Length: 164
Image (tube, rainbow, N blue to C red; front, side, top):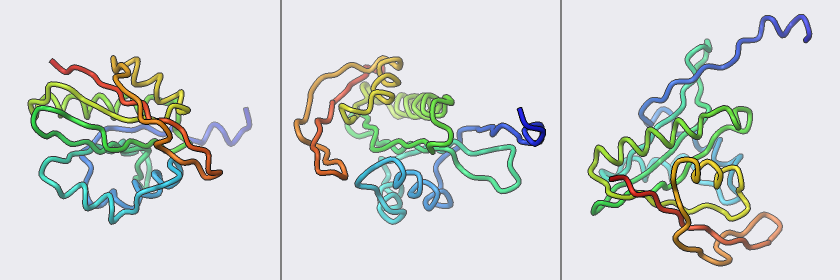
């Protein structure tokens, strides 16, 4: 361990409601994580819908607060759906995805959702592992749904969790 490591604070995060002030940071994270990323305007158009809600993992021990991740979801007719979730690669495998998903699941239950759905790229093994730990199970597949930067197409796994 270098001498300077003693002066580096480990980031600490709390989960807060996703607000308009988080849009540009969320869009930057989305761009890092997805080949076809959403802009802050696209995220905003979702966030202002009555059925949509979201959360951010906001850093609490920094002089200039930032977000380490976010999730957007919606509830309609008793069903919830994760629209998107992203964690800054610097904070991968730190539990932020778990915390964000738990917040979204709680809110979906509070909004009377009976089940939660999501789609995940079949090659995103870390995300699939997280969703399975949360209790999601594969209920379908959309073949050749995603297209990577190199043109390779992969399937989207449709996963479901009963919330009752």
